[in-house]
Length: 118
Image (cartoon, rainbow, N blue to C red; front, side):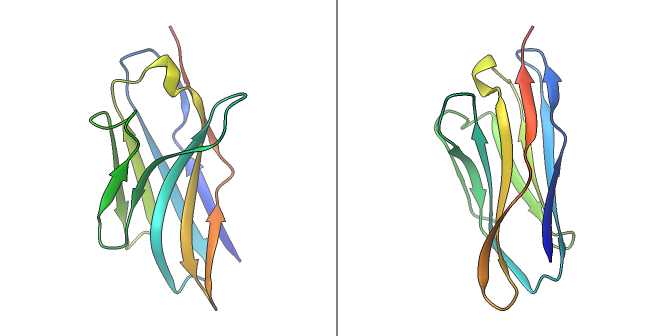
């Protein structure tokens, strides 16, 4: 069984920073891409950032220059450093990873809430 567990969400003032973490555990042979999505109330889930197994990254235009995705392959963990946070960043953030066991499967974390408000 594989689990993705996120941490690091919370309440922060506009302009502040948060760092999200997502650790994969269980019987894992390999991890390919790892991603962060977010979903705000009454909106569709959107891709925020992704990182390949080799470290190549991509970002949504709305977070470029403010968010940084990184990963520690030894720890099966992906991070999202979020700076200069804005109220519109308020959402539940979900971790996603392509994990190989007997085949490649997409796994999701349970989500962590980020609220940006004064």
